[in-house]
Image (tube, rainbow, N blue to C red; front, side, top):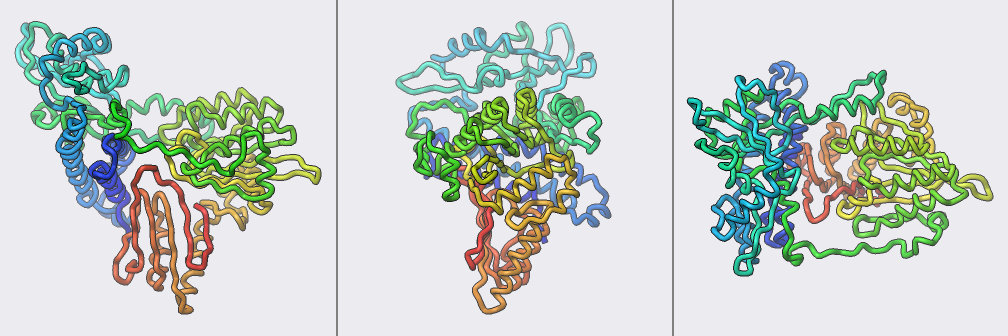
Length: 603
């Protein structure tokens, strides 16, 4: 028995809302959590909701055979849950956070008239900064235009009574927040800061766009479009080129949601749904303002309303000039990000790039920084005559363009690039450096639960292990050799590893043995105990093993950040399993498991 993964994900996003409601969280951070909730929900509608809709259209026999919940269990429940969450979102923002901002002398215009003192300033901002980006488009089959609203962009739909025509005409007005900014600071009044949406700057001046015509109504809307990229296994055209073509069309994908301002007339929402090919069931009503992920960039007037900035601990306590390879020879280095500084990882690659004894560097790249220090170190290494091989995952969702950009730069620098099979994603983050010594060659490896990304290392919790241990580094070298040979996944799966736990090769088998050992301990009269921390838990094979351990009496404590399809506390199945979900200041990404015996496995 498993919980539906999308319902579980929505419960995760609910906990993001809970952070926004928590009075112990600094005020600006509560605004940011609302922004994170909104951003998460937009991605859900771009990636997961189209899948839910597609599954709902399967016949009952197929759904039953595939162990899928029916339409009423999923799509309707998703609608209900999201609508309830959006109502809570509005309540938190309007009844808690905006009043709290006012108490701090920060006046946020939100669905209210502009004060007389600001009318002229708002008009001036519109004429001087905003108007040149406005592009009105008349809507309707009779207009002859092929206008397609962009994904996740803000629009007003304006209903007009034209002087020279009968009936209503509908016009789409873009809100150019992506070209300018979402929030504008207005002149202070009595020492109080004032902030206004660009939406309201456009709304309050919209009559200037249609002189002499009567404006019947103005409603805000936006569309989410299916963003998933499907790539087949045919490499004839090249994976990179295929992805570029797919990305170019991503924002033209089928609309998965039309979000409209609450109170929009039914005939107008039906007109928009029909015009832009949106299912009526995929029309949602929200508040006056959309894309509230922008709350993450709300102007900061008081830094005491943010989390206190924490300086990472320098570990190991060495200078950037010291030879990191010598230190790793003496002992492993285990970093706990972001509590430890990321500088040892950067030093590892920087030193490898210029060390005359380093001969080879291998690395997997999933999501790298826009101006990646690590990739630049790899380029430096290649220019210094070292053999550099990068296994780059082009299909990292919404980072495909950045990865393609870096692929071209690395290729031009002489780095050998390997792309994953189109049917899988390479999600591991490992690196290997080979160095000449007086006794031959020495391998140094880096294993990370997070990306090789110096930006996200500041707010994602991750582990990074740097080691020269022969067994582990030897297996990583063997894995890279297989990947460099462009082996197919089914060929690589034949590898035998003792130290490495690799998905598609031995991870499930190793986990089964891990669980089995603790079941044996429990049956011998011991106190079986397993602790696991993961991002997501949805694989039926893993869940079944945990159910089996629970049924044997093993106590299991799970700490899961996002999706958890395991159902705890069910008598005869999972009564010995407890699940806690973690959302906090940092994005929790560290994975690991530990048994009562003290045996541990890094995620």
